[in-house]
Amino acid sequence: MNEAEVVATGRAPDVSANPSLRRTEEFRTWFFLTFVMAPVLAVLTVSGFGFVIWMYQLFAGPPGS
Amino acid sequence: MRDLLKRYWRTLSTPSKFYSLGFLVVSGFIGGILFWGGFNTAMELTNTEQFCTGCHEMRENVYRELQPTIHFTNRSGVRAKCSDCHVPKDWTHKIARKMQASKEVWGKIFGSIDTRDKFLEKRIELAQREWARLKANDSLECRNCHDFRSMDFTRQSKRASDAHSTALDQRTKTCIDCHKGIAHRLPDMTHAELK
Image (cartoon, rainbow over all chains, first blue to last red; front, side, top):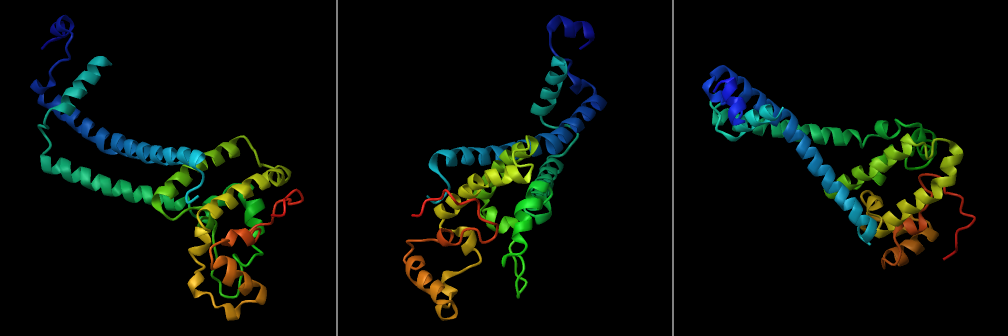
């Protein structure tokens, strides 16, 4: 797919035809998922959980009451 | 930008061509272990006394007051640090407490107790919150170390054994009901009601 085609069809170029580009993209995707997205999501999930319990305790009082 | 996202979405949603399934699974697994280890280490770090007394609000007020008490210096050298009493041990409530600490960060930024006078003014509110918490959980953090079943009344003073063998035993009272102001000084109690 050349550039003219991209403009015409509005679709991203299919990089699977270009192995070295595809390889770079796969590496970057893997790196981003493993070292950025997964840790950030995990931290957000855990802190969100803690925050929800905090908010719950504001209404229900401290645990055990 | 949109094209870039589309391109990466395509890479993301199709099977990998250059990385084996084995590599991807193992790297994810190891990454998970490293992350969880790091997470817990970081959380333990926030439980250390060094971390708590990193701010002058804690170091100059509550930590200084703790030092002459029996919870800091005593004949056997067993002592309590901040988190032993103020952070729940159970994971769920520990996380909730850590999130609540964001309010303390807020207080630090806006200096709500950044002078001794401000602290003394606010300490009744802070103390009452901790008292209510300990009352509700039946003084759980006290009982993490002090076991009622191991108390030998014959080795306690008369006043102590009288109270422990009655109200504490029948669970009509809990540790914090009587033992307020034992690790830090009491707030100004002149307006307290006698119940």
